Length: 92
Image 1 (cartoon, rainbow, N blue to C red):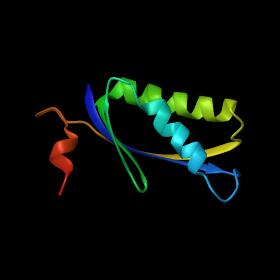
Image 2 (image 1 turned 30 degrees about the vertical axis):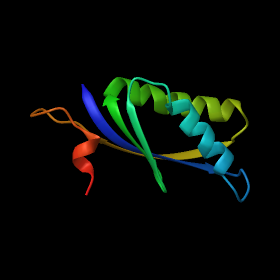
Image 3 (image 1 turned 90 degrees about the horizontal axis):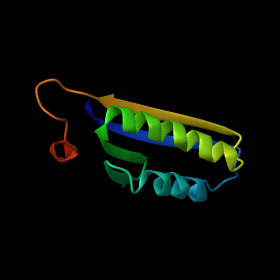
Image 4 (image 1 turned 180 degrees about the horizontal axis):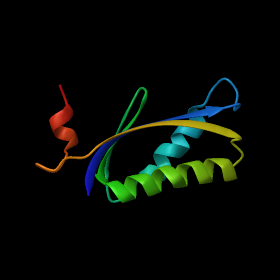
């Protein structure tokens, strides 16, 4: 099932700057079989729902394995039955 998503990861307890952790998230998302668009507050993703959910799980696992003690993520998902969801159609 195709989906679009907005994914935001908030590392807690990693100091004032979370930039290195967020850059790691982007690195983990790149090279997958979906489209990503980063923005100031998160990342938009277009692809298979199962691949998106697997990526979210991997991000949490890798960041925890690398020392981040606490993560809070926000995930918005959109699926449709009338046509394939497309990030290009979401731009204003």
